[in-house]
Length: 471
Image (tube, rainbow, N blue to C red; front, side, top):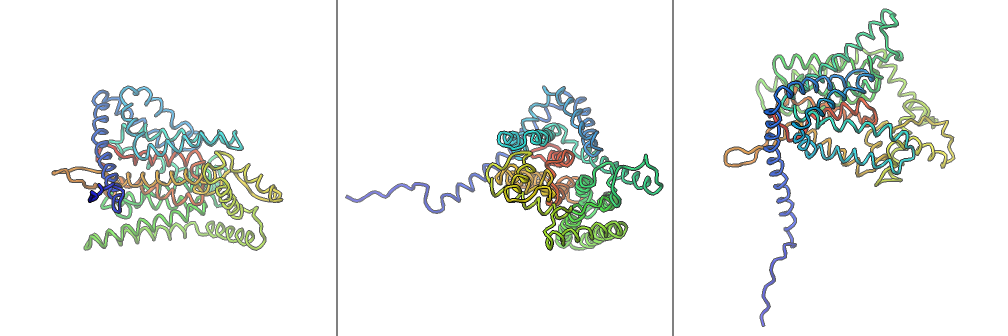
């Protein structure tokens, strides 16, 4: 009897790529459908409470500007927006759902939940509670989502807050110059960060530089002038802080934006090409000019780093500033290797390092160990595990893509197309600012500091997709 040919099982060669393609198309369709639903949710809350929407916008602007203020103000900057969001809860709760179910929202909430869960195995519950309190800022994207149709105003509020911080640096500089004590902040020589601590100031201003650079390098007309002025002032502020990691990150960010501008200019050709080269030249000249203006203090900071590195390599002296950073980064890697899946728990970094030094027969008093690894990636991996660090990176990538406007749209004939924001405007600023923070994260654990964590969450909130407003 002749055997019947078997039915295809669907598991043969070539079946799984088809399933991957089907899944990808389903994801694209889901994003599109959520976009239309998001527009309905936003329209509903606006129709029910138009006045509340306008008030909500102003309160959100105050919160975003407050994040850039001194620590005492920034600590409570979330309160007005949280209180007013609670007042509008019956109108905006649908908006919260869309923000929470967005790729950025889901990943941020997962990381926050994991941070709280890690309190179960942390070695330092007190420090853990202090650090995990920063997770309150993951609520910020949801509170901003109902007014993201006013995104340009919200970006403007961040820019204004950063300019006020630059003015605080000018205030301090005048106080130092005139030797007026009440005009000076308690800062070391060659460190002018205004009302921020120097390291925090360097990180915050790197984010501010990202807000200005797209308009400065790729903008046109008045937008380019405003962006260029903001970028130059911000670069001067970064170099004034004396924070070496922020200097390196800002130079890298300028190089990345200039490279993007060069590619766009070459592809566009003609006058557009010449304009791109002029903008890049201005950007590079601003970096060089900032270095020249801050030359003496910058030279002393660089020399100090060179001496510290030499002592760490040749004499195994890790008690210096730079030497301590090298050691803390290495201890963080060791902690991640020892606990790759769950991490050592939130707030446990310093205690784990001290205990590990004792196990190695090293007196902890001879080492400069602080409460973090001076590197956000290493700190995340050591505290929460390598998978959590990878989730954080995916969240950041999703925010950058969302901030650049990778919006799935459907035109005539139901074809799928991608719509991007104008890279030569402040609309692209939040995504560029996130790139700047990711660069400076190699030198600072931005997630464990309140103000830098707040800025990162605010920028990611401005980049949530789906959102309304077309920008």
